[in-house]
Image 1: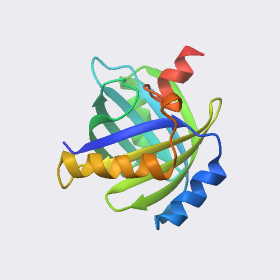
Image 2: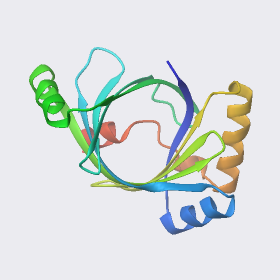
Image 3: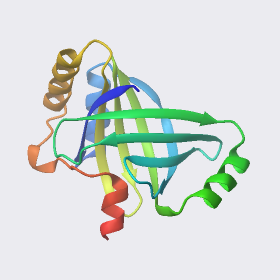
Length: 168
């Protein structure tokens, strides 16, 4: 199972986040409209992600709800038959919550920078550093990103968007 080192933070200015992404030389990976349906499961998290109304992925992940740097183990499975897959998951699992967001994706070294506008929640930034060269390299890259984007420690979020929406 692949592993990420990640953070999520409230983002006071999406424009500033875009500018910093460009300044550090991150490559624009696209503007994505994502709908994540989270299902009730015994452990971890299971979501069906629809991207731009075309692509469908099943994502399972496990991580602790911790503010600040946290590791996440995940598996992504692309589903080729979107409508059939949605029918199967709707009949097998109870949906807990649906998260809709507009995501700007930037790629920098072995990291993904997500600038998110989440329906009902507002603007956030996420860094996901894929652990491919060891945890020490991932931690150094995360520290660099947090410094470059001037992430205020008080803005860090320890839960997922799904948790935040469920608490509303």
